[in-house]
Length: 433
Ligand code: DLL
Image (tube, rainbow, N blue to C red; front, top):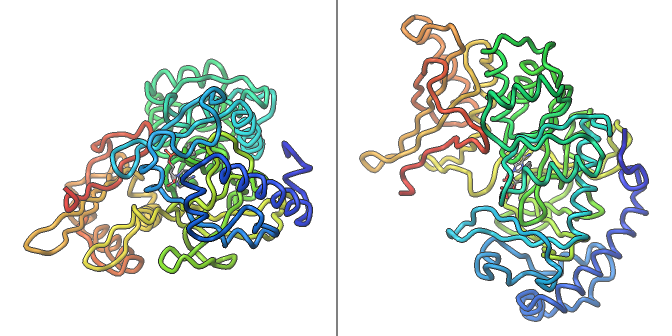
């Protein structure tokens, strides 16, 4: 089912008309009410009246994570504190959290966006949605919650953790949809297997997983082990939380709720706009928010866009999977490495390796060290030297192919690494200490 067909399947002209009207309104709103925006725009010599068509957006200055830190806690709020009804926050780059404020109307918009996402994952009013994202300042729990409630589904507000209890509720309440991080979905799948449950005995039909980068390999693994359709959901606290975009049943990119979030892709070095299909940094302008609208916000997330109509019938622009963040990129011996590249290789060895892995980066004798620790599949013997050495050489070959550099590989027995209940910590880089 398509939650809001008039918007999600609108023709380009209609969508652009909505976007232009809302963009003009947003720019006028921040210019009038947010001093740091006014200062930035004045410095660039641009006034709200200069926005006459969508492409004029490039005249506007960018806003960055540093701007949020410099204006901590609420210097970028555009509404009166009296009208702010909710606060969320996420960890910032400088130690201070990034605070976001929502008006009543912002919460309604959030509910609408997440309802569209859940609908893309096949949920309806009759669904039972188990929310296993953390509740609290993190936007995952309350974000999924407001969408499920808007839809009129039955919400189980589990929050993250307590995996045995998650399983009990899932089975007893016959949960049809699960919302959590992809790494926690695998932790739940593992617990289900340990409890002797087969995928077809688990009532789940679908899940919306996000808040961390994940790969197609990881998606296949979750689908197989939980017997569900797994959908990718993207968002960030500063912009709203989950629900900025989600993948539909075609699994061919995530539809951006572009009537509320106007996306651009830029080259992070030159800051020039990039065309459809080219990978770069995602920049988002919120065009429906009152509490803390952000204009040309540099997300640091790397992906590409396509405006091609999707086979599902939706015309909403799609973003590719998030490949990683510019600040998650590791530079090892001068080579750029994203953890998601390593995960893609691990997924190629799904019969012998699990998706539980960790990367250790350090420095010894003025040289970068790089190690991958990954668990073997249950039942495989780590002391079978011939088997392990053969596997090591095959994994090494694939990693060198994709990364361009070698990496020390350490195999671990199944169940050794700590399991994720939220955002998985994939990298330990002691060079930064
Ligand atoms: O993670 C909001 C969220 C909650 C999204 C639940 C989806 C589901 P933050 O904690 O502010 O907000 O982290 C935002 O997480 O800039 C991305 O780098 C990353 N991220 C979020 N969703 C995805 C995804 C929430 N589907 C940051 N794929 C973002 C890859 C993602 N990375």
